[in-house]
Length: 179
Image (cartoon, rainbow, N blue to C red; front, side):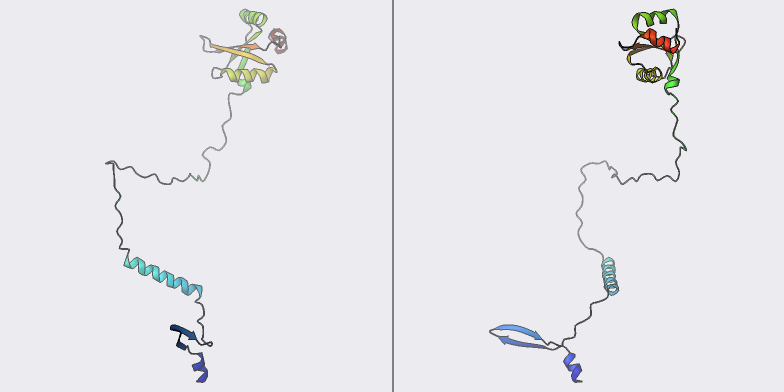
């Protein structure tokens, strides 16, 4: 009984110099902190009550200045395909060997070789001047100064490939096997 009285809370109030102060007894039994589950439960209950009660606040009305309604832009996620739609990357069909078909060996082409330091090739119609230049560089190991092209009436593309000044078209033509 005495122990129970000692454990009970009891506050002593007294006045000193006009101050009202309280003094708790030393043997006050402190409450154990609530376990986290109980705390979470209490928080959830509080939230539930708030939801049931509802929020009775005045939401400010947004002023619309235009009669047209534009749908807001929402997040668009990237596609996550289960498998690639193309099983293998496409092969480049217009490689160096496909670009240059064959050298031209007509009289006028020979005259170009002798007079203008220029080789004449029949090339793929879809090839452009840069591709022709790169193909000639790679296949014949020569520097190209300039490329002129035209499409013949029969639908083939003819390329006039002028070589750099340090290369002789006659020697290159011999090496290739035109002459």
